[in-house]
Image (cartoon, rainbow, N blue to C red; front, side, top):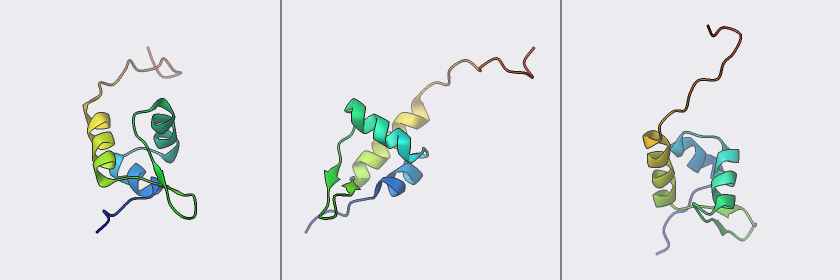
Length: 70
């Protein structure tokens, strides 16, 4: 029995990011997709949860200086 795979939108929702972030992380080699018969990217639940954990544990950077900053 084959494990259920997820679409890029499903992974983005689970991980709490946008689809472009998933594309970037794949391009950088952090995750890898498998293509289905329609050539759509498919990911495992383990990959989605790994990305979620990465995003939850990363430290926020300095706030950008904007119009309202003092």
